[in-house]
Each structure stands twice: as structure tokens, then as C-alpha cells.
Amino acid sequence: MSPADRSLTVTIDGPAASGKSSTARMVAEALGARHLDSGALYRGVTAARLRTGGDPDQWTEQSVLEAAARVTLAPGATTFAARVDGAACEEELRGDAVTALVSLVAKMPHVRRWVNRTLQATAAAHAVVADGRDMGTTVFPDATLKVWLVAIASERARRRVLQRTGRPPTSAELTSETAELEARDRKDSEQTRPAADAVWLDTSGITQAEQVAQVVAWVRDRERERRKP
Ligand code: CDP
Image 1 (cartoon, rainbow, N blue to C red):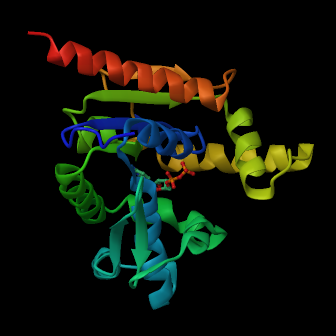
Image 2 (image 1 turned 180 degrees about the vertical axis):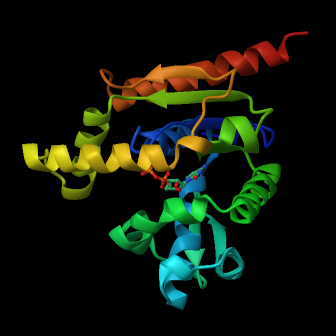
């Protein structure tokens, strides 16, 4: 697909494990844009601060901001990968230590401002499909299209275990993963909001291919509307 117009910005927001990242990645590929994963930046900042050491209860916002200076976004063909200390570290970013502390870091107002400015500067130069929780409300209020993804918690938990282990969850895994996701939803509830002009997409009963096709069709509609005299 040829590169999309640099002014194209699509936002995909929703709660934990609602399928934002995978949908955003595939939509970006289909549109010739790049996937901008805001959660990966929060995870990168958390990983950088963890590397510095010390008791997380004592982390100051200033020390987290200093760690953020070691996090960068590297453009790939269809994504921006978060790097810490100059190197990719995908497994560390998705690991339990980072997942347990990322909501604490994401609550810090100066850290949120740093992440938002980094995302806005990146999107100014590229067509992007940005995913997160507040992309449509705070970071890109003028986006071409805003999508709010929803799915019931047990379905989100099923997908998360499948993604991690490559097999369907046992019933014990399903119960604990659902509880973990619901706890994180509560911690993140303040910044997890649909924009008033977002279109809602419930992914509980549809395939990933259907989700992606639906979002791409909406983007095409918006672009057609924009070109109308
Ligand atoms: O994919 P999943 O929803 O599990 O998480 P993620 O998108 O990688 O985001 C990790 C964490 O970063 C979330 O639990 C939030 O605490 C935080 N986050 C945020 O506050 N705002 C965003 N725009 C994106 C992530």
C-alpha cells in the first residue's frame, strides 16, 4: 500500500486487552500508515525506571521523568518501536514487572505530558494509527477518525492468555486473568474515556479481520467526506 497522507491520524482507544494494538497495527498496514503504540511508551518509561533500581513505592515523578529521557521511538516500516537505552526490548516491556507498575507511572501528570508531546511530535511528521486510552480525547482531538473498542472482560482475558501462551486458557487462568484486567481497568479508569465523537466498535463477537475491515472502511468514508467540495 502506498504511504498515506501525512495528515492522517486515526485513534483507537479502549480498556486493557480490548484488541487496540493488534487492530491498530493491521489498520496501519492496510492504510500505508504507521502504528503508534502509546502504551509501549508508558511501558518503556516504566522499564527504564525499573532498570535504575530502588523501591517503586519511593519513585518520585522527577526520577521517572529522568528515566523517560532514555526512551525513544524508532520508526520501522509500519510501526514505531519503543527503545530503552537505545535498544528494542519487547519482552521486557510486556513482562509482569512492567505490567504491575505501568499504571502507577501512567498516573504521573508530567509523565503523561512527556508521552503526549512525544506522540504529537511523531504524528506531525507521519500518517499514524495511534492506540491507547486517551488518544481521541487528549492527544489527538482533531483525528480523522476516532474508534472506541469494547469487549466483555472474559473475552479480553481469553485473548490475552491466548496471545501469551498460544493456547486457550484453562478456567482457572480465565478467572485470574479476568480479575487482573478488571483491576487494571479500575486503576486506569480516569484516563480511559471515549471521545464524544468516537465511533464504538464492540469486538466481542467478531473476528479480527472483520474489525480491521470495519475501521478501514470508516477511514475511507471520512477521507471521501473530507475531499467533498
Ligand atoms: O495492551 P494493554 O491495554 O494491556 O496495555 P497497554 O496499551 O500496553 O498500556 C499499558 C498501560 O499504560 C495501561 O495499563 C495504562 O496504565 C497506561 N496507558 C495510559 O495510561 N494511557 C495510554 N494512552 C496508554 C497506556
